[in-house]
View 1 (cartoon, helix red, strand yellow):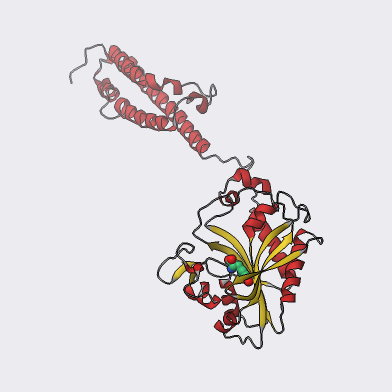
View 2 (view 1 turned 135 degrees about the vertical axis):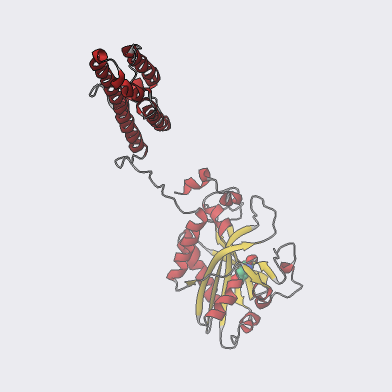
Length: 372
Ligand code: DAH
């Protein structure tokens, strides 16, 4: 076997240098144990970068310690070194291998610890942090007033009823004794949807549903949204709220109607409140009346709120028309009743001193927050 004549110790040096050069970029992760934590050593290094460093380190290990590495080549020639130099050469090769492996292992360990630490950090959940507090909401002013109205009538034995917002001509008009030529049917007022259907223009529709659902005697209160093709302004909106009342029983007279509405406004505005009934016309009542109540601000003396008249309009009312009772197969000879319809929004605007009812529909939190 041919002996190696070259300077084998010089080769060890060269291999060591080549490794050190490439190891340089990992040097910050190589420090003697206990000096610095892996987290501190990895400062400024992203988790991704650390993971990629780990992959590079594995490559470096293969390159410098694998079967095809120069280190392996050195080990192979040990046997061929002249006997005089062999021991020293073998020792230095072993020392080099130990040093390379030790460095690779230590960096590997540090990087893995760092990656682990970063992953935990990223997924960390501090259960002691205060939670995001849910902000408690509050009711809309229209809802607040609607509930006050409901409470008063419920205490007088009324049941709160609901009806659809899209209606057929029968419920919106025919059954309420509104003939086809009536102006309320005009396309200028009503939102027609598909043929024969419309957004209800009044809550009076619920009178019909209620009488069909439950037979008399009955007392029903039906608050809800209604729709009309109005151009929005300070006192109009194409969608607004009404509340309908209906009472049907034996022997009901106009006196019951007047007493009921007077009790209602007194409960709402105080016992000093008076009512006034003015003759009027509605297709579904006969006789019909517009109802006013004495101004809650000036108590009837006249002020800016009631425009000097001392009275504020409450709504329409009257004795249920016999044709309406007949439309739902109730015998007008046996039963009679009264009905009324009030606008909640306008009352709301008055009660809270709003100069524009559109404020109620704009969902502006700065406005609504005042009703907490
Ligand atoms: N539905 C009427 C309107 O929208 C209001 C009304 C008037 C309702 C008289 C009634 C009533 O129940 O009896 O203008």
